[in-house]
Length: 114
Length: 115
Image 1: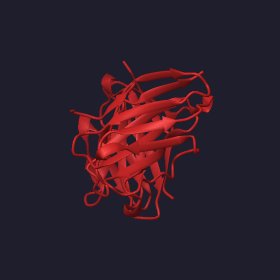
Image 2: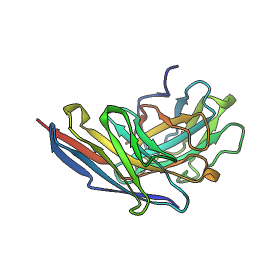
Image 3: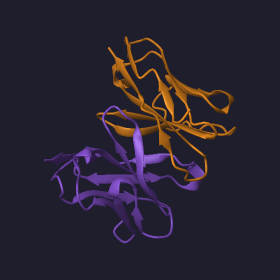
Image 4: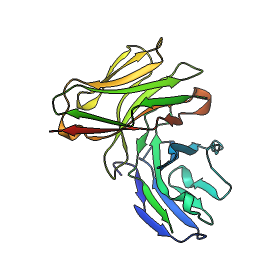
C-alpha cells in the first residue's frame, strides 16, 4: 500500500481480555517500530524489528506485551490480560532501515480498556 | 540515554504571526533530530530532519529548524502562521546507530492559530 496501515483503528475491550493490533508496513521497508502514545506518558518506544535480526524489545512495559513480525512484513502487537493503564494509541512506523532512515507512521490504533 | 524537552505544552499565535516551538535535547552521541506534526486522529508526519551538514534545515509547509550544538537546541520556526498549522508538534532525537533508529520524543506542543 501507499502508507503504513494499522487495524483496527479503534478497539474497545474489557479488562483482562487479550487484544491483537496489526500493522502493515510500507512495502520494502525492512525496519518496523511500535510506539505507544498516552496522556500520562507521551510517546514511548515499545519494540523495533530490523530484517532478520532479533527484535529490540527493551521498551515493552511488561511481559503481557509481545510482538511478532511474520515474513519480514506484517507485525502483530499482542497485549494479554489487558489493564486500564494499557489504554492508549498504539502507533506503528516503518523505515528503509538505514541507521537513521525516516520513519513513516500509521494512523494508530486507539485502545480503550474498560 | 537521549532525552528531549519541549518548552511549552501549548502555544497560541495569531494567523500571520511568527511560530516558534522550542526543543532542547540531550544526547551522548552526535544527534539526529526530527520534528513531526500530528493532526487530530492521524499518525505522525515528518516535517524535517537534521542528520549532518547544514545546521539550518528546511521542511515542508514553510517550516524550518536550526541545529545549535552549543545550545543543544533544535527550535522549529515558521515566519507566518496559517490556520492549517494548528496541530500537535513533536521533537524527537534518534538513538545512536547501535540502537537502530528508535526515536525518543518530547512531550509535544499543541499549536493553536487564532484568526
